[in-house]
Length: 265
Figure 1: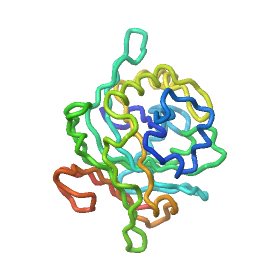
Figure 2 (figure 1 turned 60 degrees about the horizontal axis):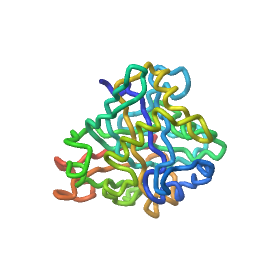
Figure 3 (figure 1 turned 90 degrees about the vertical axis):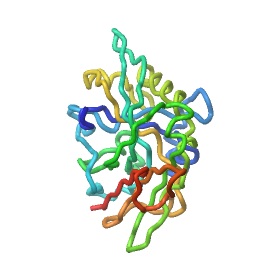
């Protein structure tokens, strides 16, 4: 299935310190989680065929477009996974199947008056970025290929390359593997429209119960430059996933790496 036919969802608060650095903890002050380190919720960033702003296919190729107003936009370096969705006869989600993963820039505007997370996530057909390479997931559990991958990100400005996000092992996600997929299934079925969150099952129904989802599983914490600097026109953004057994977190191409590169318009 083409990406533009998949529902696009994101996991909020799945990496330690990201929400604090992004100044968004206050948005979730009334959200209760089962565990202190659990993600805060699931949000939509793309709803295929929707008539609202989230119906715009927002993943560009090679370019990132800033809003035409002062936006305070930040890179959100993430891993994105293609999941197959299984429903029962009543269209309740019963299982997710992790198929492949890539890198993702869930670029976000820091919008103080936004009522929902999704209001910060999409403003044009070039609001986001995704890696061109996908790596098949042998098993979405301990002992699989993802055990060995790290995620890092950089921003080049005026010829100087800066670390934007911390270099983090994927095993550093708060929820990962079975814990994450089971949590997503629960939120797809039970999350209600409350505070910054939305009823995800209503979105699945409106999208005619898609059989695949593109799910960004959470942004890493920021390095010092990323925390203190919003993106600007002519910046170059790099979000990189690499197998730490064979390569390093840099811009050098290698077979095991996925390098997302974007130029900011």
